[in-house]
Amino acid sequence: MTTSLMWRLRPAALAAAALLLAGCAGFSADGGFGTSAEIARDRLGKDAVWVRTDQDRIAVQARTQALLAQPLDADSAVQVALLNHAGLQASFAELGISEAEYVQATRLPNPGFSFSRKTSGDELKIDRAVTIGLMNLLALPFAVQIEQGRFAQTRLMVADAMLRRAEDTRRAYIEAVAAEQSARYAEQVRHAAETGALFARDMARAGNVSALDHAREQAFYADTAAQLARARQTALSARERLTRQMGLWGTGAQYRLPERLPDLPRGRPAMAELEAEAIGARLDLQAQRLQLDSLARSLGLTRATRFVSVLDVAYLHNSETGRPRETGYGINIEVPLFDWGGARVARAEAVYMQAASRLAESAINARSEVRERSAGYQIRYDIARHYLDEVVPLRKRISDENLLRYNGMLVSVFELLADAREQIGAVNGYLDALRDYWLAEADLRGALGGRLPSAPQKGQ
Image (cartoon, rainbow, N blue to C red; front, top):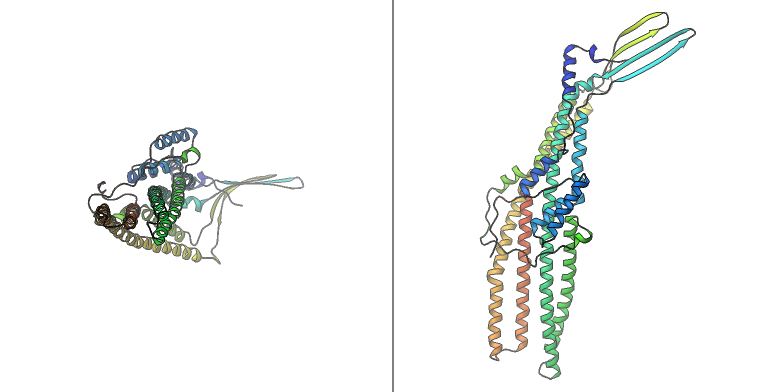
């Protein structure tokens, strides 16, 4: 039977234990959330709240209502999401779990106590023992460092979750506004097509138009009605995706969106050294680096304890009837007769190499992702600008020329209507190109860690 008391250890061990006891970590007031929120605030310019009390909930509701009182812009939608999304709140709870594990790692191991009472006739024998795991005590500083690194990693991962939620919300916002804008334009087209179809019907009844021209206008009207229905369904789905991203329900889902997306920047955006920007700024890469450091410490601890992983020190205090009391100490050690710890070390090394390879993979993918999204950002700007400066004006000019010819009775009304259909295609192409540009901007923002190195000016 083994047991130990701190005062039976050597003075150096006693001093170390006292130092460890004095250095036991306590729970922070914010659970580490302040660090994560500050990182997100620096990248996004937005606040996040970990709702843990009724006061927090009331404050979030009040601020959300103030934001929803006005038509939402992209930044307001991101702010609403950071305040209300339940999945994000679940991510915040990871901080509490990680901090609890860190605080637990700083606690001294509890001592054990054993007691036995034996009788033999008139003789009574009592054995007492107090034990403590010395190996756990010696490994405590290493365990604290490991859990401290994991806690720092969790803070980065939570901040990265905020950035990803912001990116997803921004994309959903762009798609929702673009879909509603397209649906409104589709409704205008349907009304125009209905007017053309009624006009063709009246002319056909008067015998002033062929059956073929009449059928063309009727077919175009029928097609625009179907396109309007699809556009409305797309707008509804896009709005619901945005609602989910913002974590809204009930009356909160009755928010208003602007009628159109922002205009293109005046100049062609140009950015340089984006790969280095991404490698230094992305929080997922920083979290993986901290994980690698934590695994390196864990590997060192595994190697240090490969031969002896169980070492208990004991203080003994035994008494027996008619005999003097027995006091002393005992040691309980695991003998590495069959297991020399090689498997544990091999596993720890494999886990470390796995994490190192995954970090390298993530860094390579991040560089490629930034190059791809930067190229897409530039190209989609050029496409949208081409529609705005070339395609749509040319179609309008052609429409104006045809209108002049129609007024001079040089072309028929059906040629004028056919040209209007071509102009509709050009406008739809521009709306799609404008949406794709802002989506590309959101993708690049996410690939760079939540913010662009330079923000282009808005406005045509």
